[in-house]
Image 1: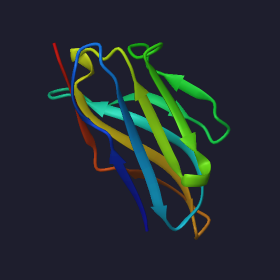
Image 2: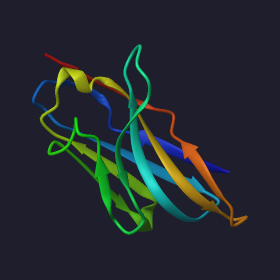
Image 3: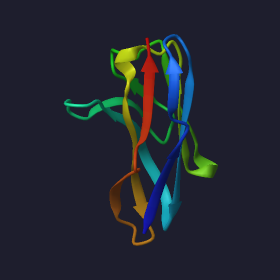
Length: 120
């Protein structure tokens, strides 16, 4: 069994910054891609940023230049540094990881979500 635990959400004023963390634990051999998604009320969940095991990154156009995804492979942890936050960034943020488990099979796991609220 694998668990992803997120932290770092909260309330911030527009223009402010937050740093999200997501730590994976359990029966982990290694982790391939790690992602951050978000879901605003009444909207579909959308991909915000992705980082491969080698460190290559991709971002949604709406966050390019403001958000930075990074990871610490030794800690099985992914981060999302969010700067210059806007009210439209308000959403529940979820981490996702492609995990190679002790059975040597790849499974996708989700965190429980953390609320980010940006006030204008």
